[in-house]
Amino acid sequence: MTITFTEPNQQDRWENRYAKGATGWDRGESSPALDRWLPQMPVPPARVLIPACGRGYEVITLCQQGFTVTAVDFAPSAIAALNLELKKRQAQATVVQSDLLAWEPPQPFDVIYEQTALCALEPTLWPEYADRLCNWLVPGGMLLGLFIQTNRAGGPPWHCALDSLETLFGSDKWVWPEQKDQTIGHPSGLKELALVLKRRD
Ligand SMILES: C[S@@+](CC[C@H](N)C(=O)[O-])C[C@H]1O[C@@H](n2cnc3c(N)ncnc32)[C@H](O)[C@@H]1O
Image (cartoon, rainbow, N blue to C red):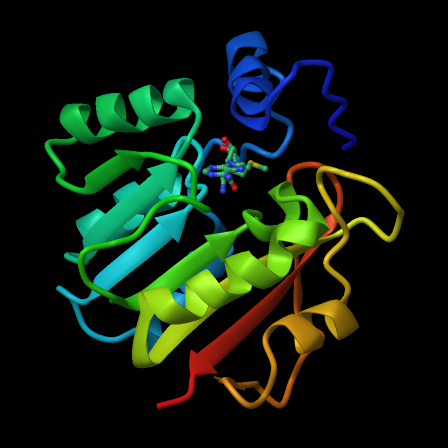
């Protein structure tokens, strides 16, 4: 999956992808990675953030499990699709249309489910975004991360190499798992590196 942008700003670019139905990243359902992680998450109604939620299938899964969910994306079509689905299912979540690099939550979260959000951002923005993820979590909070592996230059999606992630989420601020090579298939045919990091106290 290579996403080629011709439009002037990032928000318009992503919105146009939704408008054209050019959403090769979209699973059409909640990721099986989330099902695997549910047993290790804090008990509901723990507060969960999904940044760059897209159409937000995982928002629905987490609401159905009783979590208190906040979802953020700046593409109006993605937000509208998620709001419609929540209404259909009579589920409740806080859905915010905003740029993640300009948004601040009123309270930190127990868990962040980060699915192909980092890879959507220009790598020059990664250090700022990683700081934000850390600040958005309570001490001891969990970052459930799915990081796309393209093994090529350019993006989006930008390749999230393990060594870049280790630098970005340094062990001074994050507890890393022993196993760092677990992957899961992505609808694009690529793989996502699946990592659970814990924010240090
Ligand atoms: C590859 S899609 C992934 C969507 C969703 N996580 C999924 O897996 O289906 C990237 C998403 O990031 C959103 N996005 C990109 N940059 C953003 C930003 N700076 N602030 C908020 N949303 C952003 C796009 O609108 C798009 O929905």
